[in-house]
Image (cartoon, rainbow, N blue to C red):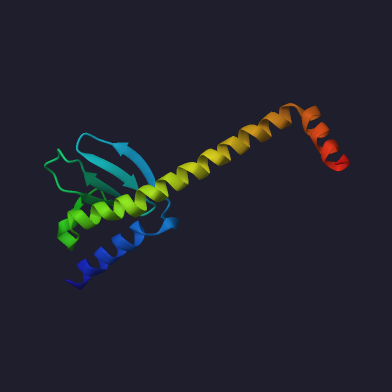
Length: 124
């Protein structure tokens, strides 16, 4: 019984952890899928008959959230308030890094622009 409490505590703490590298893998026919470095969570759609569940990265077996005492409502709130927000933050950082890469690549290909910009910075 203590193992189930530990599992519940671990899942909740990871869902609330910004550093868990959450990614949104979109909507499937019956679930929304979010994945961290340790496990994936599958939140059921309103039309789905199957319950929400967790799958660890090392195992393909489904662990339904009610098995370890997590209600569908609390699970949904954790996803809405933490996991989705972390996914948006992660997507924003990835996009910013991509834009920086494009800009750096542009400057490498057009060295005279970069040189002129550096001269302008020195003169001003």
